[in-house]
Length: 127
Image (tube, rainbow, N blue to C red; front, side, top):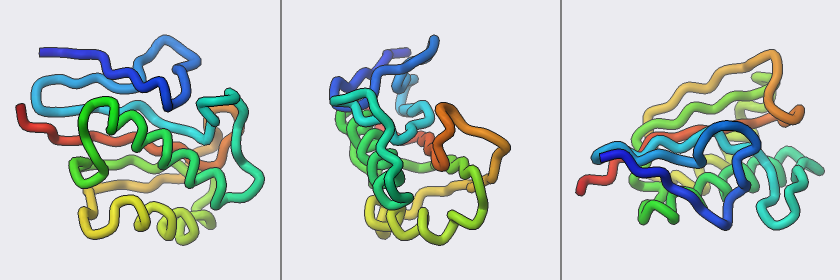
C-alpha cells in the first residue's frame, strides 16, 4: 500500500514531490524548511524562529498522517553550517523529547531558498 499524505497546514511542495508518502507501516516525510504555510514566506529572522517553523511544518505533516513526533524513528538534519548544531538541538529536543529517534546531522554547501536548516523524517505507523 502506497499513499500520498498532504497537510494543508504545511507548505505546499515547490517541486515534483509530495509532503510525505506512506508505504505500509512507514511514513517518509520530505525535507521541511521554514516556509510559513499561511504566507508562503520564509521565517528566518532568527535561527530559533527558523527551526521552530521547520519543526512545526514537520509536525503538521505527521498529524495529517495521524502520527506524532514519538512515532518518528529517523530524522535527517541538514545544516548550512555545523556551528548551528547545538542551537538546533535545543529546539529539536523540545519536539522529540525522550522519544530520541535515530538521526544524522550533516553540513551541506547549500539548501533550498538559502535556508540554514532542513529536516526530513521517517515514522513507523503500524497498521
